[in-house]
Length: 455
Image 1 (cartoon, rainbow, N blue to C red):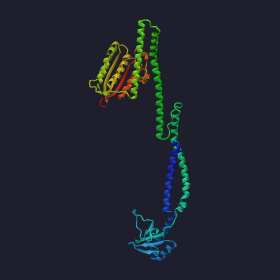
Image 2 (cartoon, one colour):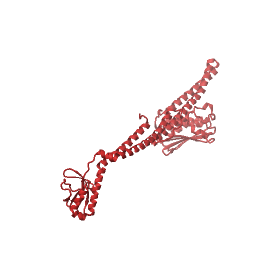
Image 3 (cartoon, one colour):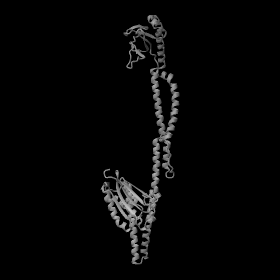
Image 4 (spheres, rainbow, N blue to C red):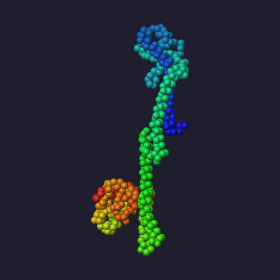
């Protein structure tokens, strides 16, 4: 019992409301016990006597017989103290003496007084025109607590308390449903995933809405990861199928003796060697990408001269650029500040970018590699004058195995489509950003932002 969140919320609200009502009952009970109706009736009677005396104070003060008669008629005790606090009149001198009233810490007269024998009196006090003090008193009535509670509090408390409890319980039930129902839907969606993969409506308190949105976001990321995993498996299978088919075919030729000449056997062996090397490179790239995405790749961080890094990459590709009749240039500012990173990994990034630019730039084209300071960053650009990339392909250009247009480059120079994905992970591991802009027929420009060494 009370194991669900809804029932526990309901019980919590009900408990809080019951405690609040109990506190109200206790406060009212204490008030009535300290000042029951009988006390208030006695005090009102004393004030009536006081008002009667004050209305005729001149005549009554001189006529003690009239004061005695008024006291007996109203079952009260009348006392008068002069300005020096001496008793000048007492309608009941045979009873224990009552002291002259004194003000409390709040400068107010108490409604209770204690006589010489410890008896408690209710009294009212008023100052007369001649400076004397008039006291009208009566013994405090004796009352029982249960009688006070039963006569004055029991019925209203039962009626009002039951009504308030009923309304509060209904309200508590509504609030508990308001909190628990969205959570129940999240639980239902989690239990029935992936059969039920609809987003859960965001309702209830702000914290529950945050949880619902976080759950929906998690489901979206899980679905995206699953799609990425399926695409990854499909792409790997596709990329491995071609070299495996070639290896299997030429190996079969060697086994069957179809390659009966030395040249044929050499060609078969060369194909098997090349395709095995291609598969080996793909496996290394996949392992490298997995380490970068998982944050387990080792980065040897140090101060790096960005200009020297670019010149080294361009120098490595100069023979290839001359062979392809492509103008390869490097533009680096003389005062380019240093950056902090792994020089080998960053060289891998720009090697990939320059390699792609040369592959997709036709003869008589141009590839420009540049670097300049940009505030707290160093901006690197690798721009080519090739055929460009269509706008709908740009958002996926850094995805694994994605090739915007495999037919636009030579078959023998095609890669597996992992270079840009690895480049992005390396840049992000350095706290940088990589982007691309391109238009068909006007070339492509890759931009890399890396933080300065002192950042």
